[in-house]
Image (cartoon, rainbow over all chains, first blue to last red):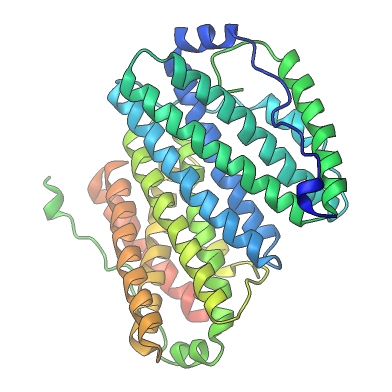
Length: 198
Length: 198
């Protein structure tokens, strides 16, 4: 089967409640402080794949580049906070990511595939929300930065999806992506609307 | 007291046994595979400081830039392995770093100061050894890369040292640096000579 025959789901499978943008803009410093940790954790997750899967050189090369890009976002968000006279804050934890990770199957290569799909979903949701900020932020410079960050997260989503499709039979992986996308949509729908990325 | 009056120790406080270079060149792929994980762990350690010390914005800004540079080294070492037709390997653990970390005091701000000094020592030792490879590697392109990586590690060492000096009374921190440098020299002297960075 050609990979172009595989029906890939939209990631994410749902749209963010529009009230989220109002809540986010009303406490932008909280969103930025949370965003800093999201980028940090994305970089750390990518680096943890280098540790766990050195026997997959193509994956290592991809996630190393990803980690490099995520760390540039950490630097950029730090600079935005400093320019606003705001400070980083302690990470409040991420019940969204924790809930998603509970769906990861235990046995390899299912574990790898699910991790890659979960990362693709997190990137996809982040891309959607950073894009919403990019449309809504009144400061044109900050809005442009968030549009650029959203575009980067779309690329990361697609990288993780391609890595997942390469890690197992593509039709099965696509089916699993559809399942996990539905699960992600449930999780995001039941979370409170709050000034965080998720 | 002016910081120029503080007697800072040389980091590291000892020179690597010259036989290490022979052992390293005799199994360069093993050294490169180990080096990949050293850079990965350096990036992860820097990111863990962003998590632990968000209340210190200057530190966060510095270690975020450091993590960005370390991840570029992860990418570069991955590319060197690929060009040589070699592959990443599983991390064998690092008894050197584990032994050093056992010297970290528990109470803040001692804990932060010691962590920063331990990172400075690891960077200093890595700089020395990458520099030895940069002098000895027969491939001129790879030798040039290792000289550049060594220079980067020297900068990182100095960044961590400056952060440590800013985190406590400078004379006390310098004294602690001297103690930890002596401890590091003992640890490195009793390790077997092997095809790893430490």
